[in-house]
Length: 507
Image 1 (cartoon, rainbow, N blue to C red):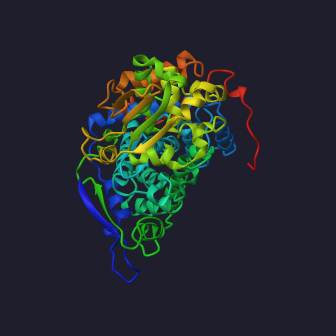
Image 2: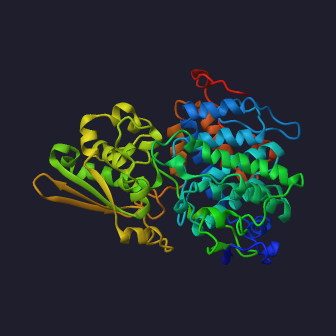
Image 3: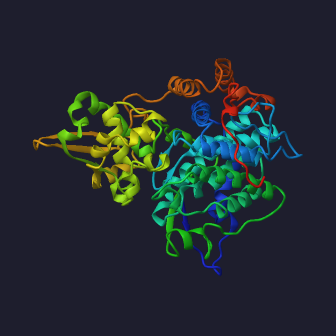
């Protein structure tokens, strides 16, 4: 990897195109380096993972809404169109709208892969947009793998180096450029075309983090899908010869100068050198539980404490629960956010899955976590849960913050220490560094776990034959023909789609 200095330039300062970050990203996208076998295997894992969580969300309101919009936009004249999760395989819509509908389905349950560093991200959000374009234009499995590998690489590299949340910019600002770069790789576009698409994709996807603050709305699921849709449209415009604001990152009135660290900013962005393999996907990790990633380890610790200390599941025995954790966990999903909604039993599911006090309490009391049951209004409003939940707070611990930001994989941590003070004054103290499913966790996810997750979440939604068809097809990804790529979708069993009513709108 090579570190590239990125700073703001005044308009009168010379900055050659090849020295701009967007151009350097485009050069990575056009580098015809071979894909490592382990990267191919992980791409397959993540396509399975996306299909798992999409299957479980097909009848949820935001997904139904996004799908109904997509179904109003039939395939365009130049191409095959793209599949929509849940619908019949022969039904095709325009690719940007398939990216939209499938992107919402993948993100709705907050249950797919993650990468956390200077910024936060769900790199699997790249896949719906790249796959939709693959189906529309007709590329083979190898080309699709190459595109997804680029999408992951660029997103991981940007997330490692450029913090967005500090300036209240939503993390999907890194997704537009990464998806555009991935599509460019897959289609074999020129560096110039990809460069223009990256600039447009970034320009149209910078938004505030209010979508993840206070009472969190359904837009949380739509935001990455919108970024993917914008990436598809940006590539289309760039292919037609349209240009983008430049330099989009470094310009005097650009993203860094006015949305991020300002005119004196200086970032060191790592990117693969020419001929260096794109390994970024191997740095990412998926979720065993349907909750924000910082909650994964705490759910596992809650389950452990349920077995070892069942007495602390009763609020009558507990004086206080204090979670000592990283800056991010405390200030974004902990009590440091100062969001009263994180303690509100009537809060939305989106809000509860960003509340560590709620999540830890339920995991502790139940000894399990379920993507539906653990968020139900009945579960959230149970009196003993509310009482124990309101005794639970978070604090930032500088050491856990340091480990969160460590570049050493063996040291990097997303957990912390919990101290439960009992009514008699005694304490129960335990800690966890990473989730059980993390590569360094107690039970790391491998292909068998991805497949089991798919079977579990697709059960009751897809027919058994459809589950096997999809699994058999996706595991042959490197050898798939362009026609077979059209089968990388999931078709709901009869009656599932008819069980929900499509809302009406403009389209």
